[in-house]
Length: 371
Ligand code: FAD
Ligand code: UDP
Image (cartoon, rainbow, N blue to C red; front, side):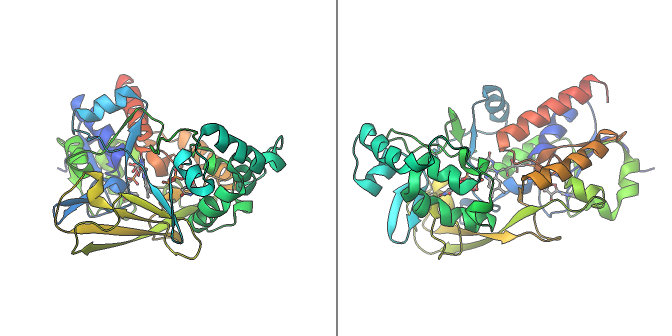
C-alpha cells in the first residue's frame, strides 16, 4: 500500500513550505514535490567559499507586517542588512532610491527645497496629466534627467519593451525622497536570514516528506490519488494545458563567478542603468551578511525573454495577461480538491512577506474548514 497524505504540495518554494509547516503543526501529513533538484524555489541560497549565494537573484526580506516577521523569526535570525543599491551610468555613480544624495550628484543641489525646485521645473510640462505609460509616469514624477540616466535604459532592458509601451504602475512603487536616506525600502523591518534562506525553508519543511526532481505533470494521476487535497504553486496556465493560451512571463539569466579578491564592488547591489551594458545589475553576495571571506562571489543578472522550459521569474501583469489570468482563475474556483497559491499559481508579483501572509491565510482557512 502506498502512503497516503492529507496534502500534496506542488512546489517547495516559500509558499509551499509555509503551508506545509502549518499543516504539519496541525497534525496533517504532507508530501511536497518540486521539479527542481533543490528546495526553496527562487529564494534558494547555497554556500560557496563560506558565502551564502542567492542563486536566483538578490533576495532581501522586508515587511511592515510584524506578525510575518515574528513568524519567520521562529525559524531564522534576521541580520541588520539595509538595502542601499547604487546605480552606475557609464562612469557616473548615483545613490538609489532617488533621494538627496542622488539629486546632489546630478545637480549639485544641497537642500530639499533646492531639489524640489529643480524637479518641479523638470516636471512642469507633465503636470495635471494622467500618465499614459511608464515614460510619462517617470517624467511627471522625477523629470527628464533622472528618467534618462536612471530609469529608461534599466527598464527597457528589464522588460524588453520601450518605456512608452509599458504600464505606469511598474515604477510607481519606486520611492522618491527629499532626505539623505539611502534605504531602498520604506518598510520598518528588513534583513537577511543569517543562516540563509535554504535553512529557513528546510526548517519549514521539517516533518513533511519531500521529493525533489519530481514534476507533477509527469505523474499527475498517481499524485492526485495520493492526497486528499492538492496545493499547487506552479504556473496556473500550465496546470490547465494552456487551454486559453499561455500567460506571459519575463525570464532572467544569471552568470555567477568566484573571484580571488576580497571585495569587487564594495556594495551588495549595483544597478547598471545604461542600455549599452547588457546586464541590469551585479550582486556581490558577501555584502548581504557583512562577510569577511578572502574570496568573493558575484552574479550578473541578464533579463531574458521567456519561453516554455525556461524559469518564469516575473508575471507580466499587463491588461491582456491579467484578463487571461482571470479566465484561469474562474476555472480554479471550480476545482473540488486543488487550491492555487504562490507567485505562479496566483499570477502576481508577490514579495516574500506577502507570500508568507497568503500561505498562512490559506492554511488557516483550509484547516479551520477541516480539510
Ligand atoms: P517559487 O519560489 O517560484 O516556488 C514555486 C516552486 O514550484 C518552484 O521551485 C518550482 O520549481 C515548483 N514547480 C512549479 N511547477 C512545478 C511542477 N509542475 N511540478 C513540481 N514543481 C513545480 N521578494 C522579496 O520579498 N524581496 C526581494 O528582494 C525579492 N527579490 C526577488 C528577485 C528576483 C530576481 C525574483 C524573481 C523574485 C524576487 N522576490 C523578492 C520574490 C520572491 O522570489 C517570491 O516572493 C517567492 O520566491 C515566491 O515563492 P513561491 O513559493 O510562490 O514561488
Ligand atoms: N528601476 C529603474 N532603475 C533602477 C531600478 C529600478 O528604472 O535602477 C525601475 C524598473 O522599471 C524596475 C522597477 O523600477 O522594473 C522596479 O524596480 P525594483 O527594484 O523594485 O524591481 P525588482 O526588479 O527588484 O523586482
